[in-house]
Image 1 (cartoon, rainbow, N blue to C red):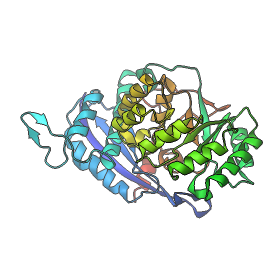
Image 2: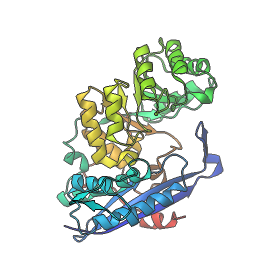
Image 3: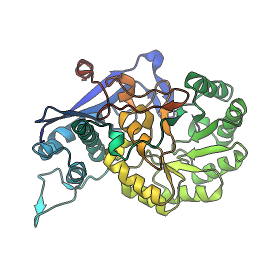
Image 4: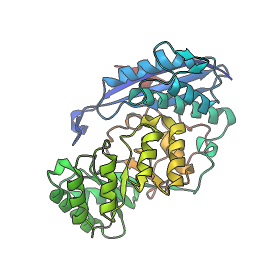
Amino acid sequence: MRITRVQATWCHVPIPYERQHTSDFGRVTSFDSVIVRVETDKGITGWGEAKAGVGSAAACAGLAAIVNLDYAPLLVGQDPRDISRLWDVMYNTPREGYAVAKGHVLPQLGRRGLSISAIAGVDTALWDILGKSLGVPVWRLLGGRRAERMPAYASGGWADEQGIGAQLKGYCDQAGFRAVKMRIGVMDGSPARSAARVRAARKALGPDVKLMADAHGTWTVAEAKAFCRMVEDCDLFWFEEPVTADDKQGLAEVRRSSAVPISTGESEFTRHDFREIAELRGADVLQPDIAWVGGLTATLRIAAIADAAGIAVIPHAGMNTPYGQHFGFAAPCAPMGEMFIGTPPGVPLAETRLFPGMAVPVDGRLVPSDAPGFGLGVDLDGIAAMRP
């Protein structure tokens, strides 16, 4: 089997004003994503997704160009089933001229950002092809499912102190979730106000629902430590991204200062970033975004690091994406998955419904599909209509 064509398409979906979401990221006015299509000489087509980040519409044009102009020439004629080797080819090949020295490929100079996200789009498409070629779901290729149903937690929680309890309880009532996540941080103005919202949430939810809080890396180390002291009696399941991803020493300091578990990772790009967090003992949970870190292949390498260090891996927005679902069904270090509720920032593929067939939660859990590959249908007309 050989790759005959690689095509990336920027999909832009304006959000009606009444459904636009405002948070500490600002107002999200559109869903933007790059859909990658990989065709083969055997008639099997794989589909993948690459993302440029939350609210980064213009960057998707550059992301699609990297796939179409830089990576596609490397991939046409290759066997799509050689996924790990092709990942390394894309990661290690410089885009300017594909220079080779003494028979060895030189390292790529831009080893973060769009270059890595572009690899993710191709990589997830290759996993889709491999599953289809063998007639099995991707979760089977990853080692098989570890349980009949995968627990998910509802992710949202932007309401104020008066409304946060009802909002989170609504998630539980909507699909039987027994774990929920709320947003805190600079949007509240101070750690004390965030702590007050967390206390209101815990009071409304009672003791039996897991509660997580996400600061999106907006606090200083001192503010994060103060918040931890204020919520020690709230039984947080974890405190997410307490400080900027650039301050990993600070992250580890926050974790050492409190018994509140710490999670992080959606702002990281390669396994090397996650290795540093693991070496610093900076987190109890790692949260790579599969469409940012380089796809399933990169996430499996991150999971190996985490599993050896006794750290859980729960991908960012994992249950809103087909590749995240399949990873969660199979990974030994993935105890649950994240599912955005309502208007999910940063997960356009799920929101636009271009790929019907993903598992949906029932009683807070998801059942994996037995269909080959990622088991999805494809709305080709929808993709064409969403080109900007």
